[in-house]
Image (cartoon, rainbow, N blue to C red; front, side):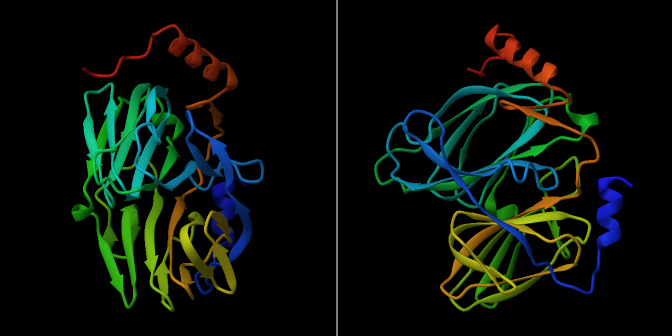
Length: 294
């Protein structure tokens, strides 16, 4: 029985999701003096549904060089930049130049190969930079698709409001609220804000593998409190996720249908084999990727 079939067999829509394991994100050097908290991948957990990477950065002063990432390539995945505060300018080899602000979604499809760079807004009065970058692995049949870029402003993303709680649907769906962000695979990506004392129950897809990452404050899943900088890998099955916060908190819920095929993460690439990853790295070193658009 395959992984997807096994997961479907364990689904019980009458129970709520609980926490299977807690993993503290690891401080990781990004570029220059920049440091991030890396929640995925890790030895204990390589991916959650199609999500294979999750970096948490800031809050940090918006000074020149902070989180500015020079041109670099990607293959076989989608990068997702999401900010809680601050601003970043995105540039890529398909001609995109886009400023990212809190609540917006930048969804870049690398496909067969793309190059991008990110520069922090360090102008007068710039807010501290705080956000996440995640990678979504493309299904095998789409890993060589044409590179593209989608920017969806916060105003176009569904916002589901509860008493003392707000949930923005970044990708996928939350009940009848469906994100306009185009995806190649069924997934869930939610931004959840809870005021002090708030509780909220969210409908989730029973067959989706899910995790919760706390970016600020604390958020409890059932009887398990998850602190800032911790990834909670959620139990399989169940169509309801109940969250509570005593002091207030902000978290993302991410995951989706497990990808049925094996994949390899090699540097900035999602590929079928180590040999393919080495070949694409050689392409980058030889200057065979497209340059950033002028």
